[in-house]
Image 1 (cartoon, helix red, strand yellow):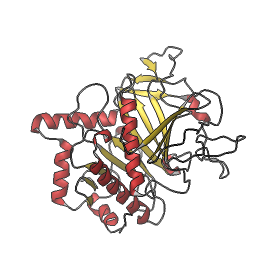
Image 2 (cartoon, helix red, strand yellow):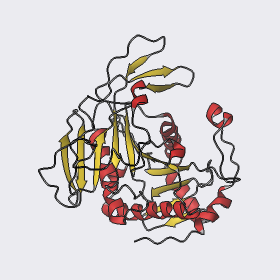
Image 3 (cartoon, one colour):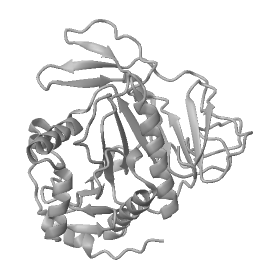
Image 4 (cartoon, helix red, strand yellow):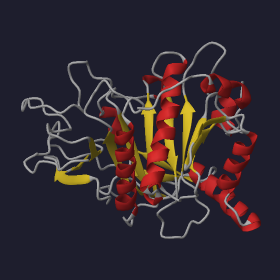
Length: 366
């Protein structure tokens, strides 16, 4: 753990883990809270999809999770009201991480029953909620740079801890922002899924990266970044250690990637200077999104990084991918039959056109 980050681990009344992070010492008298005392769901399992060659997760207990509660009830807001406990206790800390109450994957997963005609296995792994800030009216992009750097340290800490588990082969932090992508709670937060396998999308990326490394002796993303910098038309942030750009092969309008220039395998591999520049790239992109149309910009933000399956992955190059999810006339499209059914995207816009709109948005980093 980084020397500048304080960490305190607690256990909730229902048995789930709560971890508090801060730049300053955390009081020792903070007690973990939870909305109830019932243990989290454990009836989650995986079934093999024989035609797609991939695992599908089943967790029907998630139908009972909190969905868009009334404004007077915020499950992620610290409270001193013992009659209505929430997920977070009051106290002086800046980021909180806790096990999901309705997990898709969990170390407590039970053996599936009854047997299926396809291979099955318990839904082992982990699902964690990362509360970015105690301020319910803030957002990831509104946080100061020091707070984003702290979050990168938190994500690195979770990568190391979760990745060390035997039932975890891939750690993927992500944020779903906006009801347009199915957000159930408005409080600024993200999640971490720790899978017992390498998911299909990053697995395919890693396969292509590995083939490129064998053939050319250099990293695929490293070479793509170099070419994007030479081209220059799609760049949104060009820092000394990190870059943000709209890929020439972007499938979504306003799709943006962020990566360190050095081919660091994971967020845990970033040094302090790289974290600082990565935070600047991240804030630049988020501010441009929100200022583009003068309203909160819905998106899916996903970390792709090296697996934790115990194998070396020299091909891996940490990067964030943003998939915008806004629907405005003539600007974005919903995914339809070709995209969802065949995995073949039909792009209605060109990256070279849409990047100009984001490039034109002037932002100021505090």
